[in-house]
Length: 98
Image 1 (cartoon, helix red, strand yellow):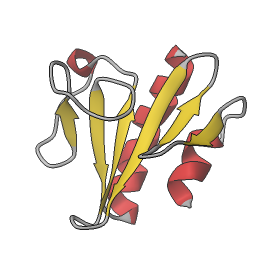
Image 2 (tube, rainbow, N blue to C red; image 1 turned 180 degrees about the horizontal axis):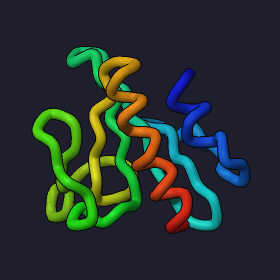
Image 3 (spheres, rainbow, N blue to C red; image 1 turned 90 degrees about the vertical axis):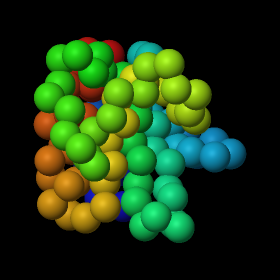
Image 4 (cartoon, rainbow, N blue to C red; image 1 turned 60 degrees about the vertical axis):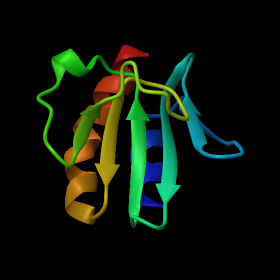
């Protein structure tokens, strides 16, 4: 899975399959990935402050105050190789902050 490779590329990050999602942690949780087959999208919640990211309709979303599975306040919707490429810098920021 390309997202798994992107999240674990910098080392020290381990993926842990849980009941509803896959959690990725370094010393603290960095991200969680949840597959939504009905919508053909992979939702990645990153441990990043949404105020530090320019939110883009249909790609990123502020999850503060919204109940959701996983960890993090920034949701990234990955639906293609192009959106995965756009998501990689955000995952790197979440990794660096952990």
